[in-house]
Amino acid sequence: MTDTDLTTLPPNFYPTYETCPSISPLCPVKATTLGYSPNLPVNVFLAVGFGLFGIITLLTGLWKKTWGFSTTVAAGCILECVGYIGRVLLSENAWNADAFKMQIVAIVLGPTLVCVGLYLTLRHIVISLNPEMSRIAPRLYPIFFVPADVSCLVIQAIGGGVAAAAGRDNYDILKHGNRIIMAGIVLQVLVLGAFGGLAGDYLVGVRKSFRQNPGMEGSALWKDGKFRGFLWAMGGAYAALLIRCVYRIAEMAGGWGNHIMQHESSFVVLESFMVLIACGLLACAAPGLLFPEMSHDQRVKNMGKGRQQGGVDVESGAGEKTAGTGASASPSDTERRPGTGEGI
Image (cartoon, rainbow, N blue to C red; front, top):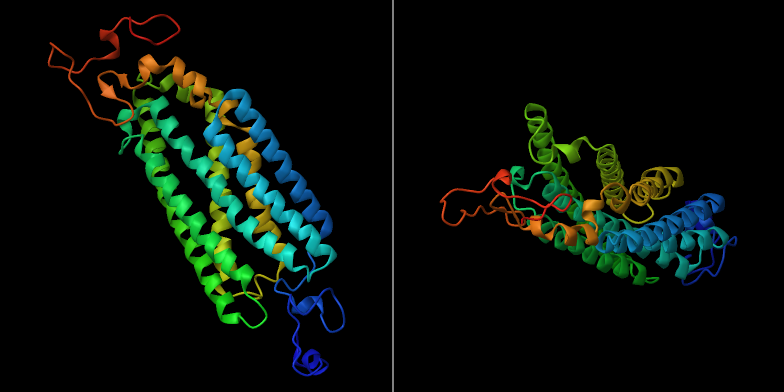
């Protein structure tokens, strides 16, 4: 609001979500935290898009039995859908306090769950390609990144709750909520950066090795068109989520109601559509479709190959000596049943 606007208000009155039931001359839309009424068609499109991607991801996960991945990504999509339903309600009444709180919490938390699904893929990629080339044991990827991302979610949830609960005279509490959300987003960017660094380091390394030795373990999967499509989709989703998180830092840095937060176009492009692109890629290029090695049935089928392959514990990366030989076994030392990969 401008100084001229403020002079027309009754004494001791200031427009807030508690004092303004709807838009009026005393409660203009510019006095809201967002400073605008969200675009109705855009937010309906986003709500439907996230809901559709959530359903696709969940159904694909149930069909292909990629439960961990599909559950977390679908949950993130549903949260995003709820958040944009809140913005649809705000387009009808920008002073709807419940809708404002709904969109704050849901849109902040949704991408964090989508990131968890992304983190779950790296362990299976490493195991399926060549675990010996990973700098850390494959089992450590989810052990580190999933709790780290959940920590980001918890921190942002606390901040969102504090911000949403800030009342008429609680600007200091609102600022504290903003700082907590900022801390969670900054931590999320650091976690995403570490994940991208490790994943990129591993994939660049195996690419170089496969070029030098086309017959080495994992080269057949690396050349598979569906698998390559899966990697490109995961990379696109990662880039979109990283852009979103960096934008969120800039958006929240100026406090609630700053000029970046009140610019709807930048929010739609750098927040809404970045997360929608990520969810769309994860739904349409789901591991159950393009990377079946990640499915529960495939992991059970390959159990005989799984934990011990070539004398190396695939999960921990620890080598074991073959009994009676004092040397590590190679794949050629063991007869295998055709089509199963299991030792006889």
